[in-house]
Length: 94
Image 1 (cartoon, rainbow, N blue to C red):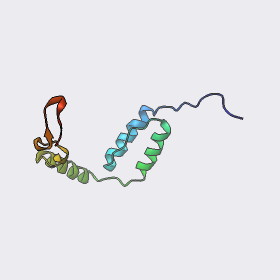
Image 2: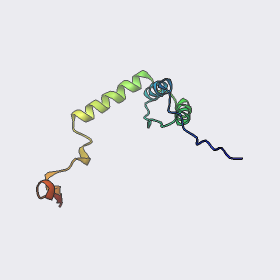
Image 3: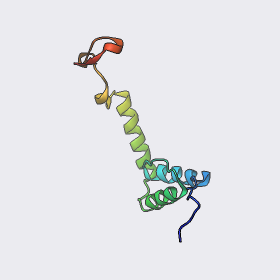
Protein backbone atom coordinates (compact mmCIF):
# COMPACT_ATOMS: atom_id res chain seq x y z
CA UNK A 1 0.00 0.00 0.00
CA UNK A 2 1.33 3.44 -0.88
CA UNK A 3 0.69 6.83 0.68
CA UNK A 4 -1.59 9.06 -1.31
CA UNK A 5 -0.27 12.08 0.61
CA UNK A 6 3.02 13.58 -0.65
CA UNK A 7 5.76 13.70 1.96
CA UNK A 8 6.70 17.22 2.93
CA UNK A 9 10.02 17.85 4.55
CA UNK A 10 9.94 19.97 7.68
CA UNK A 11 12.36 22.89 7.69
CA UNK A 12 15.01 22.97 10.43
CA UNK A 13 13.87 24.54 13.67
CA UNK A 14 15.43 27.78 14.90
CA UNK A 15 16.76 25.80 17.85
CA UNK A 16 18.54 23.35 15.52
CA UNK A 17 20.07 26.21 13.50
CA UNK A 18 21.28 28.00 16.63
CA UNK A 19 22.83 24.77 17.93
CA UNK A 20 24.50 24.16 14.56
CA UNK A 21 26.05 27.65 14.58
CA UNK A 22 27.35 27.15 18.13
CA UNK A 23 28.79 23.73 17.34
CA UNK A 24 30.45 24.94 14.13
CA UNK A 25 31.98 27.96 15.86
CA UNK A 26 33.31 25.87 18.72
CA UNK A 27 34.91 23.40 16.36
CA UNK A 28 36.26 25.83 13.77
CA UNK A 29 34.06 24.27 11.09
CA UNK A 30 31.66 25.57 8.48
CA UNK A 31 28.41 24.03 7.31
CA UNK A 32 25.81 24.53 4.62
CA UNK A 33 22.45 25.55 6.02
CA UNK A 34 20.25 22.46 5.93
CA UNK A 35 16.97 22.48 4.03
CA UNK A 36 15.24 20.01 6.33
CA UNK A 37 15.22 19.12 9.99
CA UNK A 38 16.59 15.67 9.12
CA UNK A 39 19.60 17.25 7.36
CA UNK A 40 20.09 19.53 10.37
CA UNK A 41 20.09 16.52 12.70
CA UNK A 42 22.70 14.76 10.53
CA UNK A 43 24.92 17.84 10.51
CA UNK A 44 24.60 18.19 14.29
CA UNK A 45 25.67 14.55 14.67
CA UNK A 46 28.65 15.15 12.37
CA UNK A 47 29.78 18.23 14.28
CA UNK A 48 29.41 16.44 17.62
CA UNK A 49 31.99 13.95 16.33
CA UNK A 50 34.53 16.71 15.60
CA UNK A 51 37.00 17.69 18.32
CA UNK A 52 36.43 21.12 19.90
CA UNK A 53 38.98 23.85 19.23
CA UNK A 54 40.52 25.49 22.25
CA UNK A 55 39.80 29.21 22.70
CA UNK A 56 43.51 29.92 22.12
CA UNK A 57 43.40 28.04 18.79
CA UNK A 58 40.28 29.98 17.73
CA UNK A 59 42.01 33.28 18.54
CA UNK A 60 45.13 32.23 16.61
CA UNK A 61 43.07 31.23 13.59
CA UNK A 62 41.07 34.48 13.65
CA UNK A 63 44.30 36.48 13.95
CA UNK A 64 45.83 34.61 10.99
CA UNK A 65 42.75 35.32 8.84
CA UNK A 66 42.81 39.02 9.79
CA UNK A 67 46.53 39.20 8.94
CA UNK A 68 46.00 37.51 5.58
CA UNK A 69 43.20 39.91 4.71
CA UNK A 70 45.30 42.90 5.76
CA UNK A 71 48.18 41.70 3.54
CA UNK A 72 45.87 41.08 0.57
CA UNK A 73 46.60 37.35 0.52
CA UNK A 74 43.82 35.41 -1.09
CA UNK A 75 43.52 37.78 -4.03
CA UNK A 76 44.45 34.99 -6.45
CA UNK A 77 40.90 34.94 -7.81
CA UNK A 78 40.91 38.69 -8.45
CA UNK A 79 40.47 39.71 -12.11
CA UNK A 80 43.51 41.67 -13.31
CA UNK A 81 43.53 44.38 -16.02
CA UNK A 82 45.78 42.34 -18.32
CA UNK A 83 43.29 39.46 -18.30
CA UNK A 84 40.53 41.47 -19.99
CA UNK A 85 40.12 43.15 -23.34
CA UNK A 86 37.32 45.42 -24.48
CA UNK A 87 34.99 47.52 -22.37
CA UNK A 88 31.57 47.07 -20.80
CA UNK A 89 29.30 44.52 -22.42
CA UNK A 90 31.89 43.80 -25.14
CA UNK A 91 34.62 42.89 -22.61
CA UNK A 92 36.12 39.42 -22.94
CA UNK A 93 38.95 37.34 -21.52
CA UNK A 94 42.31 37.97 -23.17
